[in-house]
Image (cartoon, rainbow, N blue to C red):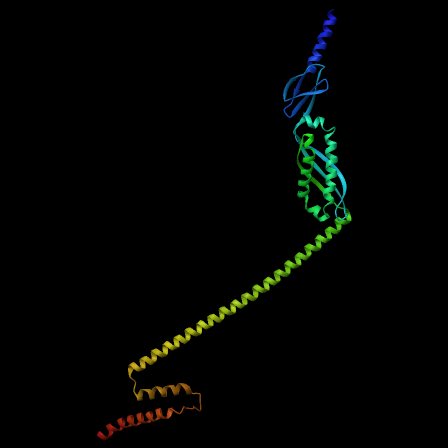
Length: 295
């Protein structure tokens, strides 16, 4: 009798242990009763009906599907190897459990098929430079297709798009040639700009020098004009006589000859002035002889 009680107690303990389940914060528990979905339990302690009820736990955290590398033919018939990763999170644990048998395999095949379609519509250069466009379109396609599975695709990232080795080498040569061409163009533009700036600098310097010479000549001419006006005005204000003019004329002739000239050509008008000089000479002579007669 005691052995039967012990066995019964152990049986109750085992049944009680199976009936008590703990659900973690990132999980949801799908409770089935006799093979039929009954309810969804949240995190915490959950008590099941022994034998009659069963629990399926679903991870609600964001997860990653790694798309294996595959060969894809581009629009210009170049075979490239492409792989990607898909990030998703479960929004409905019931749908992801009962509407698809194996979500990981289904998502992988769906991503591979649509990736081939997207790359096939693009040329090689476009596929290499349109990663963001491919990521966006593939995410939208997968998100729409997996909606009935209770899953939301958060983002898709292409890991690599690798062309064949010969195509890669040809692209490297093309890029090098393009960089060399741009360098030559920039160098030519630099020489051209330098020549233009040098020419503009010389032209500006010539203009500045010409302006300076013009201003200098104007200043000198104005100075001479003012000096002439001052001398002319002073002469008129002093009321010069013919004798003074004749003496100044002689002084000017002395400066013209400068002790070096053997011949001096006088203008026609000089005859009148010379006559005045002769008259001055007679006057001085008379003044010199007058004291002698008185003596």
